[in-house]
Image (tube, rainbow, N blue to C red; front, side, top):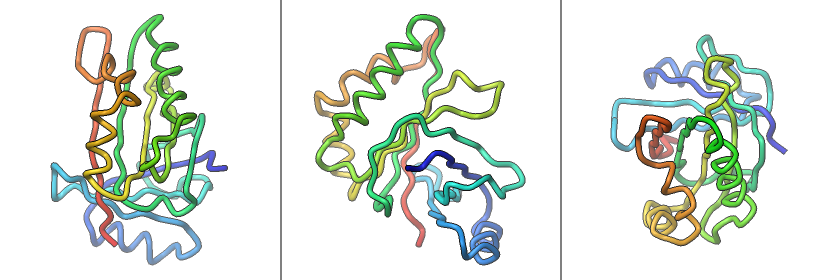
Length: 164
């Protein structure tokens, strides 16, 4: 089971250097779909972070394909008060019910104390069409109350495609 996950951002040259310097690690070099110059390097090695400025996530629940194939859909949620437990339950249900087209799902929390109330859902999909179908399904409906910005809700999402 994956319990530690970290990632960082940088140029292709810098991130490729990290990959080359650590052949023992399981990396996924990904490119943001809406920001073509934004690259992220995900370390799926289940080890302590090696990045200088990592985003560190603690895995709370998962359903996985050990290869984490396809594109990553990264969703970050931060809600206040009683809604935190409702969000937690909704994310856990996505993981437990694992949509058929989903390769992997990770429910995580941000390990940084300043953002410890942030929950992150990372799902892996073979195609953008599979992801879109899920976003239009009943399975995704429980998350829609959390996917808009509001005074008690911060939401961010990004689709990452594999670079290599």
